[in-house]
Length: 428
Ligand SMILES: *Cc1c(COP(=O)(O)O)cnc(C)c1O
Image (cartoon, rainbow, N blue to C red; front, top):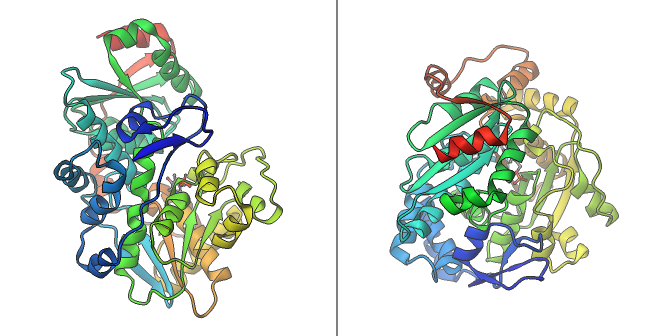
């Protein structure tokens, strides 16, 4: 299987090459040349498959030229080693809990798979890879944790001092082993610039084997399709299935459309967004008009120009009418998000995080009686505990795993925002 760039100005690459390159030089996104369809045996046997078995069956056609079957089995067993339970919230509405991984958010799935692919591709080289990541909080944590204890890979993660939450900082700085956290006296933009400069620095690249773990890497995107099958497996009544997907960069929703193209029976998807509603507006007006990003309580979705928009369009062959028949738009502001967290808890004793809450409410507002709805609960509410406490108007006790993390000692290297200092640090 080859992967082409959605801008079609560069040659298609193998899976391995696309993973290593990450971003095509024509600024498109890598996309599979063919979308395999699953046979009826897969669906007949689905109930007996584990998440990692679903993963290796779904991902094999994309990867088999570069990853032997047995190796893919190892990779998926290591990467998808936590539960993705489907919980009934109320009649006809279910929550797909994607937050049982190490950083309590769904990005663990893609990050853990990418980490193990890169480590495997590097096995034949005798030099370690150094992954550089800049983070404003969440995504970097999932990447760093995804690479934790993976052989042959060192991760250096830069974050702006004092500008990430305490929980996020603990997730970055308590891992140790092959993960080094560098605390920069500066902003997130400084961190990002230092990483960019490192990739452009000839001397560094000649000495170190540098690599990135960019969020639009094909190895982070493809595995996001597997939990749609996992949800389907756990659902009793699969008639008129609707997936409501809290969306920012649209990796998650486009991976759902990929699952549907592979044969999963879905009636439609809902693009559940906060006030940064470029896709819901595009669905109604047919005009793609990114506006200034508005900060919201569901901040992982504060995206005005979603990076996966090209993949979304590729999945419908560029046809707006087709996208509109498969995806309904929905958006909600912060005041309604707080109300939803409260009403969902009062009615169902189920706590949603600010992202999942939007997915839940989108189902409440748009579902018909004959539909079954699943919203993706993309993060554990403890990551946004102050917002949830505000919504519920009461203090919440921390789950055990949070207090455990908070009690671990922080280990970081402090540094100014000068590239020179960073470079000499990388040279060790
Ligand atoms: C990243 C993220 C999202 C948005 O997912 P996309 O794939 O970028 O649309 C939603 N919720 C949480 C908690 C996230 O971390």
